[in-house]
Length: 294
Image (spheres, rainbow, N blue to C red):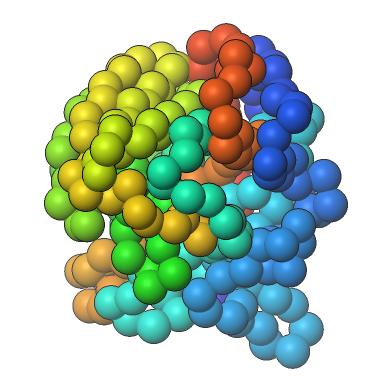
């Protein structure tokens, strides 16, 4: 069951600065809250949006961080993945050489699933029937990745849900493990909590045939790490992707998306060394969310 979407909002208790003089800045000023991201500011997606002829139920859509426009990817409006067992992602074209120094910055938060009842009424909303079957509580893996023209992963950050209490509403501290990945091989470095706003900065620098990298995630949990991508200095980075992967649901006995979603804004790509950096540490970002059953 689907229902008319309500306004999705986010609250942040401390603003983050914006960057300038970049090759690409996506501030999502042309994206309306709850509107489909596809086609806005050059963003596309690997699967089309579902529609019933009256309403569109996007997996990539407009949101807010504080009062600032943002984008989100996840099952907020639709919990059926477009193709079972297939990752969904929104992407933006880039044209960058790994043989040049590169810095990427953005703000992001993962907002946890809360679920909805058989009438499509979200958890905590008036009329919610908590005694029946609750849908959309699955917790999914997310990814922020850089890819080449063959859709091969150059570098990505992967966010895998930490297995814990099966009821996401029982705790405000559900977490995701953060791993860096290249060619699909992951190395876990930290954990982050739901609804916490973080600042992400990635830097890449050529080193002969290799590429040295470092990244930092600053927020309630903070980590900085780095390493070397062997033999990748001749790669061309053609896309940035923000994606979500379905997971098995015992409720529906199928691959599903929960109502969790990754929200992001202030995406900046700088292809040369720069002293410009996102300022400040991460803060709490709380989402006012309503759920839809696919």
